[in-house]
Image (cartoon, rainbow, N blue to C red; front, side, top):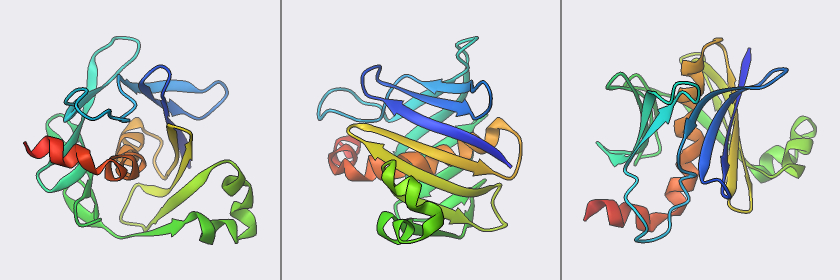
Length: 180
């Protein structure tokens, strides 16, 4: 199993995608934290860039084609979280269970995560290359721990849609802004 950490930084206004290891390696970066100020700017599309070459490796789209957030790789939808609350990989709906902080904190194995700011988690079945995505929030920063069955950075990009979904949903005015 491979782990990735996706975290936003409100001070830098960036989102980092890190391969967990010793040392951790930056697999990608987005030049926004997706914490949008009303009327500030349109971020309907953002590039995920390779920090070494500064070249685009994927694209994040908000509120397009029935999705709240989607990640595209080479102009094809890699993963998406839809307006109906479905999670898709490669256009195929993947079943998942979303567990709340309260439920997870009541279980001994997740108690420590609850103390670290856990807000919710997704548990995905065998149809996904992801097994679990744990989502955290502290002040205006969010982060997600993505557990992948495959050892490739594409899995981290798939998890990005789930990590960002709640942040985008919580900012309902973004959808109103995008529709105009």
